Length: 101
Image (cartoon, rainbow, N blue to C red; front, side, top):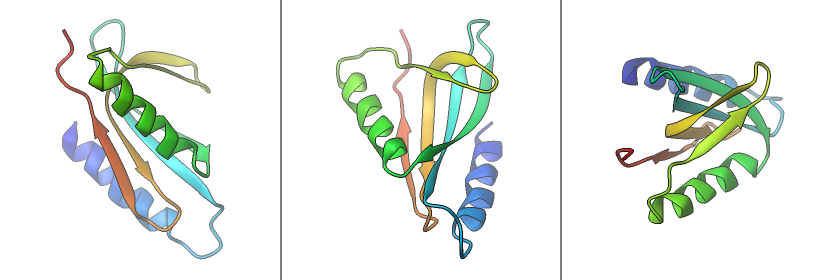
């Protein structure tokens, strides 16, 4: 799963850094479904929203709260294991949750 995630981040870094790209941030999230299966999800978010989402995750993690996220199209709700934002300039910001209890 980690190799898949890293490959996805690398590929999106190249795509997002392309000239003329829209100012969106790409969220890549490894999430645990209700059945326990880990899944990789991607969502394009408005500029600034992805980094704010990671800041919210970090705040929740300080309180040892599980972090749940619902993504649209297709609808999916799961517990966030790790999340990465790929910025329009190709830079990245990451969050990794502690072990769920």
